[in-house]
Length: 78
Image 1: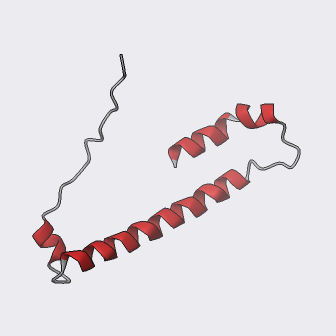
Image 2: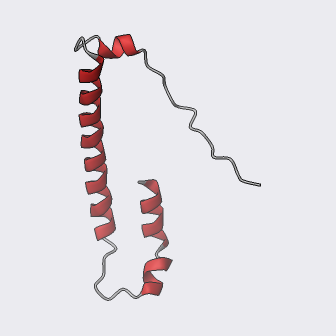
C-alpha cells in the first residue's frame, strides 16, 4: 500500500480579481508573481550553496559524502 503524502495546511487561496486589481490584467500579474518567485528561488539556492560550501573538501571519499548528516539535513531543508 502506498503511503499518502501530507498536504501542507498553510495553503492560502487567492481571489483572481483581487490579484489582477493592481495591474488590471491577470496575465501581467502572473508574470510579476513568476518573476518574484524566481528571485526567491535564486536567493534560496545561493543560500543553500553557501551552506553546502562549508562542507566541501577536496579529499572527500564517497563514504564521507554519504555519511555527512548535517549536509543531508541542510539539503532536505531547502
